[in-house]
Length: 188
Image (cartoon, rainbow, N blue to C red; front, side):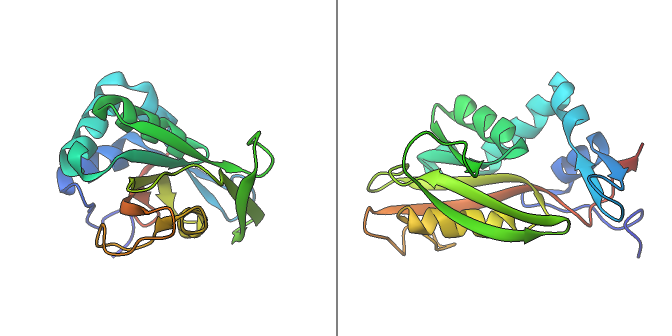
């Protein structure tokens, strides 16, 4: 089965997954030859589609299941901020190196086209917070390194919310990834 006819799936159901895949664009050979960039800008630019996606995410991840949303740079910020706004929660950025003004924790990882480092303020989470981690594409490893950063910042890294706590008592409530690389998207 090729990516063109593979079923579209997602935690929030096939309808929402199909909406995301249909509103996204493959950009071949960006940022370097052999890499296919998943462009979500058309989805973000279409207000009706973007609202349906955010509403679907909020319905799936009920607002009482998390206390704060952590968005992985950069497109994860857009989704995380929209979820935080829709649910009345706060948002914590997981940034590229050198972008945060205060003392931060960092983790480096390999990309298809180089290396990257993510950072989060070391005091980003408080005791008892449940964190919904948001990234846009499962491809580069940024999510797993973002989760390592959350662990270093005090978030317990358990898929079963609340079962593992770090010294500050925060924990990962769930991890949301909007588009998996095997999802079919239209090419430009």
